[in-house]
Image 1 (cartoon, rainbow, N blue to C red):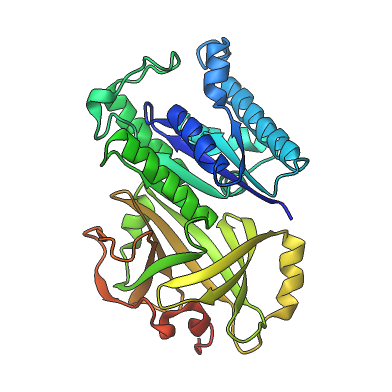
Image 2: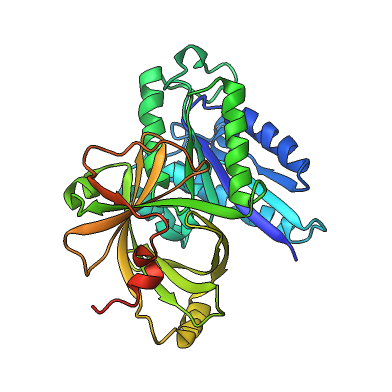
Length: 364
């Protein structure tokens, strides 16, 4: 059976995306993947003479760019499905959500609506997102426009754009940030490692740390440009002993994506997890197999980027004094830096009473 994954490599100007494409192709071809690269649409259009300053308006240009991006991704997926390889990795040099950084949120909504799309589905159509931080932030001496004639930003503009791009993707369920804390080769190796971890190539399990925190400052979260609220409904299904089977509705504003997840614990921090995308019809059909001993879990999840870390803060309707914060880690001993606005009460990684499966049995 084919295993096709579609990921995005994004980030600010002069972040290393062009080199990353070549690096990923070579690294994952050696791991047995057919690697398909979807070229950056903006560079194609601008170098071809189609740009925000040549079209009638920026909206006119963005309509062209987003439609071409969607068309290319659809055709690459169509081609992938005809290939004989079992493992196929589609790598997008930027994705649809990057366009939001170049217009107002209302304008971006109009563009998506005109193309029959919405923000939730556009963001979550990708399986994972990897954000490379611009060289203008942490590696200023290497910031240059020499390898991209379409690049025009100053160092200050590049840093601001990098933040806007990261904000556009915040809310995605698998977003990772690759900073400039090492030399460039180290940056590429860290990117390769993050992608391999996502694909389950380094090990087949995910590692999470979980913390009980004081009820967060919702106003601060809501107004933080690097935070996004996502509505989640989670229902546990009847399953075999030792296995956790659940379905989830995830999205906002009436637009949702649906998943089925199977999990098996290895120890307190490690779990083997497999996930399948569902249609709304499949989700509703599976609701009939809900475990009668557990009620549905509803929560607001605040996805927060902070110091190149990606936190998920779950706020439940039955708690007014506390919440749960989770973070996926590649290294069990990794140091975690919490924002000053978050007050950690205790770490509860491995504590079964704070698992969603246990919370679903609570009297509410």
